Length: 300
Image 1 (cartoon, rainbow, N blue to C red):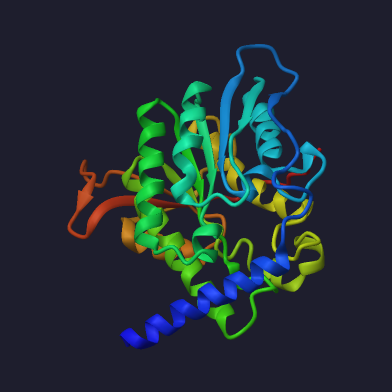
Image 2: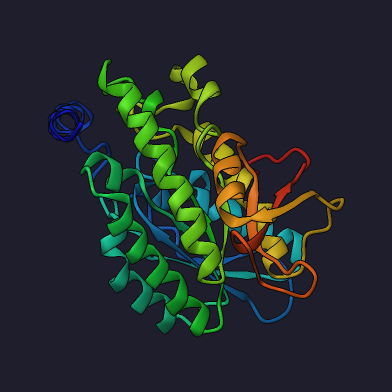
């Protein structure tokens, strides 16, 4: 088993290297500049910071309005009826170990709500999940200590990425989901909340790759980024006590069980909770899985 694991690990690294050569870097190293104030409303702006990897910056887009950060900022502004001051501090190619510098910038911006997209580069660089989630958990704790609400979009299902060929595609899918589950547990323990991206970027991306992926066949298209933003916005609003939609379907249980469930249910949110007045049960910390049903959203 040890030998088989070592061979699989080596093959994943080799396959990831091939995929990265095929993918390359479209439209430069980062997305369009999207920092600014969004929403034509009076009042003090809500300070939102987006951290993470190429998804956080909308790599491949040329119009800031097509990036997930701007879509979320505009949506939050409309729900809150207040302007949103957006700072995007993510960097294409960033893995969980690279979040420290981004957190420094977020804290300098006096962040009120932080959105993190991270995990894909931990998979493509074959970073062990335990190491990746230690960095993510530290990030969430620092942001929470600074007074920010934190929403993490967990690692997407990279098994849909065409440049990653079989038979390693199924290994990548399994690795992605294991990391997403570990991220969920770590983030909940640190006081944040997660939104499951696993299958969200799965069936539709697999069925309609020309529409959901950009030209490099790795990063999302404008429609793909919109879908990611669409999944995260309700949780960002809820974290600030602003979500106006109906009460979500709620399931309570061990964080470990709910983390495993969330990996299989796209768009679900996991947060810490109390059961019978207690934060910890016989099988670990209590958590709640929320199935939200947001209404339609457009990028306009």
